[in-house]
Every structure is written in C-alpha cells, then in structure tokens.
Amino acid sequence: MASHDEVIAIAERVRSGETSALDVTQAALAGIEAKNGRLNAFLTVSHESALDQARAVDAKRARGEKLGPLAGVPIGIKDALCTRGVVTTAASKILQGYVPPYDATVVARLRAADAIIIGKTNMDEFAMGSSNENSAYGPVKNPWDPERTPGGSSGGSAAAVAARMVSATLGSDTGGSIRQPAALTGTVGIKPTYGRVSRFGLIAFASSLDQVGPFATDVRGAARVLGVISGKDSKDATSLGAPVDDYEGACGKSVKGLRIGVPAEYFAKGLDPEVEASIRAAISELEAEGCVVRPVKLPHTRYALATYYIIADAEASSNLARFDGVRYGLRVEPSGPGKADLKAMYGATRDAGFGTEVKRRILLGTFVLSAGYYDAYYLKAQKVRTLIRRDFEEAFREVDVICSPTSPTPAFRLGEKVDDPLAMYLNDVYTLPASLAGIPGCSVPAKPTASGLPVGLQIVAPWLEESKMFSVAAAFEARSPGLVPPQAS
Picture 1 (spheres, rainbow, N blue to C red):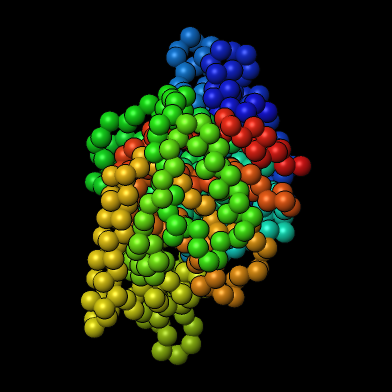
Picture 2: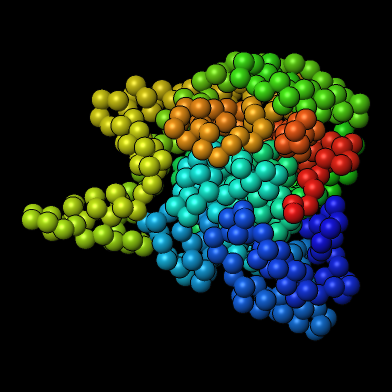
C-alpha cells in the first residue's frame, strides 16, 4: 500500500488477482491498530465486518464476476454518515450507542463499488469546529505533529489518510470541513458542487451547506471515489440529476491556456507569510505548466465569515431540535421536586448530551431566527450570500478556476484557540465563500513550511465543473513530486 496512486493501485491489483481484498484489509486493520491509539482518528473499527466484506469481494472475483471500481479498497467513513449496523454518533454523547438500520446513500454506493467499509472516523461534534477538539470522544492528533490539530471537523478522516491507515475516507464539508483539514494534514480533500452528492443519511448540521466528499492520498484516487458517490438520488430532493463527468479522465488533461484567477482578498492581513509564499510558488508552477494567471475581485469576501455563522447556526438550531431524548440515543430523566415533566426531560437530556460548541451555536441560531431579529440577521445574511455567489459568477466570466490558500495558517497547537471562538472560526475564512456559493473546491498539498508542516492550495471551480478543478489539481500534483505526505511513523 505504498504506491503514489494508492486507491487506484489497490483496486487494480485486487481486480487483477495480484493481491486479495483480504490481504489489503488485514494490512489496513493492522495499521489502524498500530497508529490509532496515538492519533484517535477512528471512533469505531468494524474489524469482523470489514474482513467479511473483503472475503465477499474475493469470492466475487473467484466466481469470475466483474468487480467494481473500488474493489478491495478500505475506506473510513466520517461518523456523521449513517452506516447500517455500525454505531454512528456524530461524535456526540447525545447519540452514544445509536445504531442506524440503514446506510447513507454514499456508503451504499461505496459498497456497490466493492469498497471495504472499515470503520467510522472521529470528528467535531455534529461537524461543528475547525480543529477536531470538539469531539465528545477526545481530539484527533495531526500525524505530522501529534501536538497539533489536524483541522476540523473531518479531522479524523484527514488524519487517517495522512497516517496511511487507509488510502481514502469520506468527510463532510459545511464551511470548509474537508478542505481545511486536508490542508493541515497534507492530503487531498474534495468538496463537490452542492447537490452533486446525496446527503441522504448524513446527520445534518446546516442543510443548505452540507456536502459529502472524499479525502485521498492523491488527486486521481479522490477523483475515482467522487465519481462513485456522485449522481442523482431519489432519496435526496436536493441532489442534482446532471450527468457525472469522468473526473478521473480529467486528471490527465492538459491545462495549457487555462485561466487561473487569483483574488487579492485572499492574500490580505492574517495570512501566514510561509503559507503565502507556498501558494504563490504553487501558482507559479501552474503558470509554468501553461496556465494564464489573472487577478480577480471577490469584493464581498469580507462578509463571508459573519454570513456563514448566521446561516449555519440558524439551520443547526433547527436541525438539532430533533435530539430531545425521545427519538434517539441519550435520555436523562430530571430529578428533584417539580422536575418530572417533558420539558424538564428535554432540558436535562440536551444539557448532558450536547457539548459547549454545539450549545453555543444552537443559542446563536435560535437568536437570529427569533421574532424581531429574523430580518436583521438571517434575512440579511441570505441577501449577502447572494452577493457572494454573484462575485464568483462575475469572476468566472474571466477565468476558469480560482486559486488561493486553503487555510491562513499551518496546523496550530491543540488547545491554542479553544478559548477564542472568533480566532477558531477564522481558520475557515478562505473556504467559507465557496460553501456559501455552492461551488466545488479542493485542497491539494503545496510546499510545506520550513518546519515541515503541510500547506494546502485551494482550487475553486464554477458550479458542476469539478473536471476543471481535477485537471488543475492533477497538473499541480504532477509538478510537485515529493510533496505527497510521507508515511507517518
């Protein structure tokens, strides 16, 4: 499992019979067992189930049946995605012990492609966080430096790939929760167009922003996984019926003459000098590949942070109302005189089940939706969201993709920002605008800092034009040998 194209190499070796799915799965399980105690990337490892799935793939090949595009590839699943018969908690105490009776559509599609669902990865509780320090089951450690955060909220999925426990995982991106941890761990992370991938079975945080996407060790591997999970789903009314392009094929296309936009708003105060130098060098590499670099303007970028936290928190307060001790997981009966009523049980359950960050966002969201404040905050935020989307539409009249830093800083130390929510929220300042606009974006590893910490190049493309994004990402990856993250010890 040491090939540069790990996802594709594994699948092809299993399909050809060069190796067995069982051998691959056993190797992955051994890697998880050896490394997870130090990194806390996996919350649940489906040991016996994974071996059974691998045996089924090998039996299918032995019968001469055609195997799927992810034959025998072990894949970790963010714990926000429902998996049939496997505990799914969204890293929250309020869902402790919850076992879904069904698979999320993306999980079902991975199974149909003969992938091995090997376990559930750690995350910020209900996907709320930028450092993976909000998990009820402990923080995830960054494989490059275990004293640092891997980013969030899909930090477990990112760390599992960076540490080579598995070659691919699924995460979810609401305001940057795939791209930002990909940047901080030196992995490839993809946020597709809103609606490109089904959200059925994803435990909702903010429904108009949530998107499922892959992490992988390389661009082609991520492209193959995205191709498998994309497409219309009758169980999700917001999924799109547009044809799925050949993302993997797009990785080999020339980018000569492609126009790359560079927004000045993304290179302003607050950007770490080493990150800026790395990204400007990456853009120069693409220019050397034949791309044409042009400045573009995204003037409403400065409003993205406030807009995102109003909209996302409003939707979170509504989505999380269902967790009340009646329908799912934890239930706490209040004690004391006069406490034995339904409202008191709701309060006691939610107080015990939700963590601090989730409570903070529910309170903020409830406030901005309340009578007298709806027009001042929520409605205004939706209008600004439209302006941000129009910024991108205007820019994409002049360029094919937009390149920028993914995160303003390299991985920061665990605990460094937990007492300053605004400083923490600023980690997503470069990923939020694309989320609000619903357009695809990815992060690919750029030149690390002098101290060896990963840096991510963000590539954003127009609505449903993931293929352009993959072409540019693969072209940059091809010119950056040695930037693929090393095997974690």
